Each structure stands twice: as structure tokens, then as C-alpha cells.
Length: 201
Image (cartoon, rainbow, N blue to C red; front, side, top):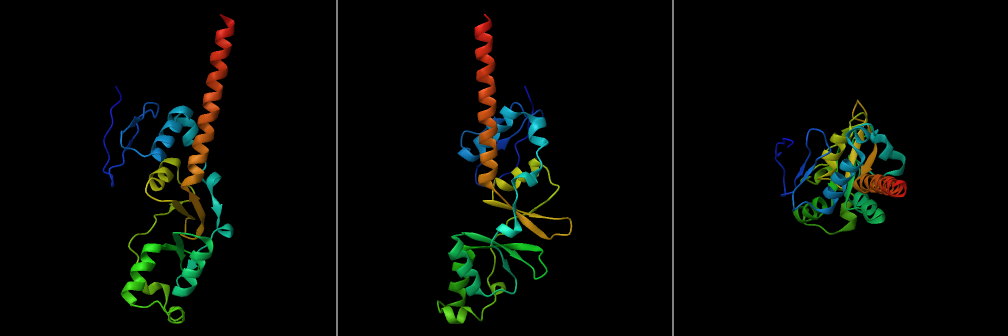
């Protein structure tokens, strides 16, 4: 039997991997996302998953909405409303990733500032809004394990270069799509193999 250690996690969600990745142990309370990822790892095998370049999943900066630290509260709200985002990357003026602003941050910030006046929001820096949590980034040369570790708790994973400059995001949806497609291919291959064995008997 493969040995494993139960890692400290938040929210009661567990995803365990045996040393060879082929006998993943799934907690019964794991939501469908974790199940899909783990099934994908079992179906595709350790080597295939580890050899995937995470930039394969990247949505580049040119296609991503983000805000700068010198943007106003109004600019941020309008951009998030227009894109229908629940959170958005925050960049320094020179383009380095510095954090995330969420709908919750904005709501608590508005309560704290005691204003719903759109005109007043034009004079309020987004940096006046406290951030309760920040999506942790990965570097462009990170491996799949690092990416999955982030994606477990984040809807998207910011990607930065070796100097911390923001180059894009990887969404949880793209990871699930990849795993689903790999699972379909693995199932199709197995079905074909089983059929060939049946006909040779």
C-alpha cells in the first residue's frame, strides 16, 4: 500500500497523492473539481501531467482585465461591473503583480468609507480599500503541482515572470477542461484496446 501524509488544508477539502501518482486517495467530501483533477492524474499518469508546460493554459495579459494601484475606486467598480468579474488582478504602476481586489473587498470598503456617491469614488484611490485576501501567483516556469496547489483555492492563478511582472492568468476552468479532455482520450484508448482484445479472442 502506498504511504501518504495528510497535508494541512482549509475548508475540509482534501486531495492526496501517492508517491507514484497512480493511486490517488480521494476524500469523500472532495468537491467535483478535485475529483476531476485527481481522476485526470490517475488516467494520464505522472509523467504526462508533470511534462505539461503551465503556459499552455495561460490567458495572456493582453486579454485580461486588471487595475493599477493608481486607479480610483470608481474605475475599479466600473471595470469589474463591465467584465462581470468577482475579483480582478491589481498591478503596480510598472506592471508587477501586487494583489487581488474582490467584490467583498469593495463592499467592505464602501461600508468603511460610508459612501455610495459615484462622484466621490472618483477621488478615492483603490489603495484605500483594504484587501482581505490575495490570490497567490506562480512563476512562468512553475510545474503542474504548483499550479494545482494554487488552483485548489483560487478561481484563477496569476502568472508572473522572474522579476514579478504580471504576464497573465490561468483559470481553474482551463485546468478542468484539460483534465476532462485527457480523461476522455484515456477512456477512448482503453475502450479501443478492450475492443481489440475482445475481437482477437
